[in-house]
Structures are given as C-alpha cells and as structure tokens.
Image 1 (cartoon, rainbow, N blue to C red):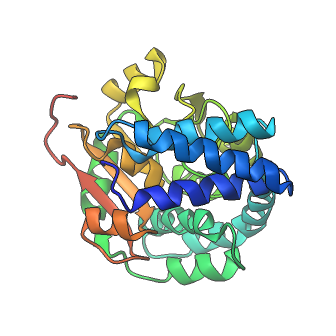
Image 2 (cartoon, one colour):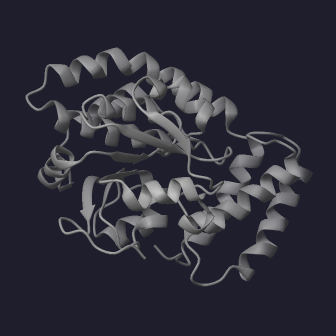
Length: 288
C-alpha cells in the first residue's frame, strides 16, 4: 500500500509517542520532531508506510539511545494476553467451529495495537470483538487452503497479540513457521516476545530480517524470502504487514482490524471493521 498524505501526521505522532516512552526530556522530544520533520520530504513517493516507519524509528532509537522504547508496553501486553489465554482457549474448544473461532480470536488480538496511549481493557475489547461477525469473511477459502497445505508461514504483528496467534496456530494441523521482526520496532513481536507468548511451543520462530514495522520483502533475508516464495499458505497479521504486502502478487490471507481511515479506505471498509481477507486466492500466481 502506498503512503498517503494523511499518513504523515501519524508518523510524527508515532515518533513523539515512542520518544516519550523513553524520556520526559522535552528537548530530546524536540530533537526527534525536528529530525523526523527534516526526513519526511525526502522519502520517495512510492514508499510504503512501513518503509518510512523503519527510518523514523531508527531516528528515535538513535536520539534516545534506547534500542526498544516499547519494552515495558510489550511486557505488559504479553502479560495481560497470557492471563486471557485459558479463557480464550476454552472459548475456542467449546465453539461450533474451532478454526473459525480461533481465527476471530487472532484477529481480535490485533486490537492491542490500538490501545497504546489510551485507557484500554484488553479483556473487554477482545471478547467484544470475538463475538462479532467478520466484516470481510473469506474463511471458506482460508479453511480450504489450510486443508490442502503442507506448510504455513505466519507473519506476526504486535507482541501482545502473538498470544492470540498461538491460539490460532494450535488449531492448524500443518507445520507453522512464525516470522518476527529482526529488532525491536514499535510494539511489534521479536523473537524474545514470541518466546514469552509461548509461540515456541507451537511453531518454529524465525526472523524475517527486517527492522521495519511491516514485512518489506527487499529488506528481508534470503531464508525468509525462500519460505515466503515456497510456503503453501501465508497468513499476514496486522496493518503494518498489510501495508507492506497488499501490492504483492502472491496468495496471502490478511487478518486484521482496520484502525485508521487511510487503511480502511484502501480496504473498502469502515474504521474498526475486522476481517479475514484473501488476496490472489484461489489460483497460484507468480511473485513480484
């Protein structure tokens, strides 16, 4: 997905938010704002939001000296999500369609990203979303693809929601590889976070090789790219991965909640909608 003009204020807001998670020093925050504001005009117009986000968060890390500004936020989200795991697991096990319910649980977990910077009750929000119908529902294609698959590549998004991803992975009979960010960026899941979420118990964990808040293929390492090319089913979680991969000519299932007007418009949905959307399904096509 290309970057839109409406994205730029969000880049600045995101940089300020990340900086304030590390320091209360206004002069440091001002340096971040100035550095990001100088950088923005130089981004190529064909850039995707995760490509710009990658450079912006490097600026934040450089100025603050913190390699992981969202560390405390991620730890808290993982802890909260792990506490919900038994109830959500039981909810799936007693449902009429375990795979469908587990997919909705995974999508509901995407709300955690939405909660940063506001009062937020994960339990209330998640169970409210799980009880909703999907606004885009390509579950039938999803189920058929998984039934035929011999391998699954699952692209993680934020750290807390990886607990909910685990619940979906546990309902997939095919071996799953779970891809994480190479280094901390935003509140996205890294190898350390995936371990804390229990993903190592249900899937192989690998780094995609990119530090961006989305799977930018040209920045990924060769092992990941081979998996991306060869794996039977690719499951992509969250907005950042959608922004990076929605233009790729490869079958992908996107699981997310639309959380900003730009992405909602690109998807043709309303803000807050939840979706399991297949692209380039069912026929296999060449990758770009």
